[in-house]
Length: 157
Image 1 (cartoon, one colour):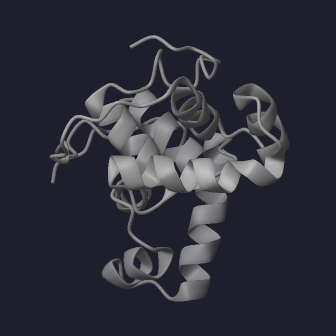
Image 2: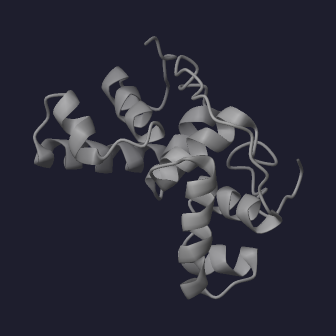
């Protein structure tokens, strides 16, 4: 897999970590594949998030796609799905790294009600994690605007 070179002091190992997150792999698997101890992997991912200014794995993946670093990551085959406006808005919130309360406000639900919506969204996309859902959304054009562009409320199709 050939991935695009980076700026921001992001290394090829960091890109491999981001690719693992984009594929929905658990942290333990990514660390094991890279021959890193759990502690070393935790340290690396925390530092990577700081360098990127990422607030979550989903936000980090969105930033990696926006920066062009995932250019060598093959698109995952998935059947086309129809997403509701709320699901699209939630995808935007995940991509922007918004907190639960802010996300709930954007989608018009109570924070406690986001769980079922998120579960339904991940199920519909065939995603294992929030980061994987964002990656699939980017790959298949489900996000309304440029990733990280405050388009969470957008319903563009």
